[in-house]
Length: 97
Image 1 (tube, one colour):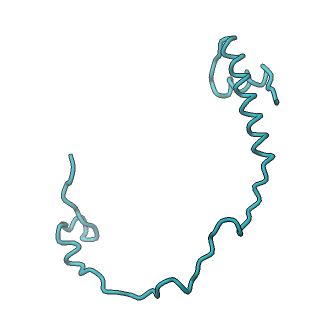
Image 2 (tube, helix red, strand yellow):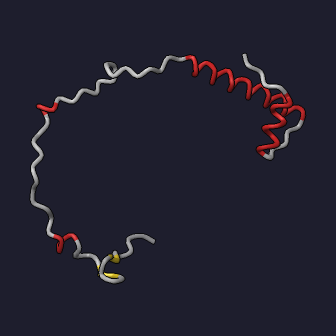
């Protein structure tokens, strides 16, 4: 287990503008040491990417053909708006308080 010393914790506390009592200092040293130990354990885990394990193959033959369709009429989409500014933006009615 990696253990940080009091000088290191004091330095971190000074940079963080924190102050600890003697009891809190001992507790923080234990907690920070546990965090460092956990990070060391995580660093040792093999995290190499294996694309055969992610089930990410896309069957392109099963996808539908992408066809352009009819769009909504602009007048209908903008029927509840008011032209604002220089006409290049729209003001919508207030929906909520």
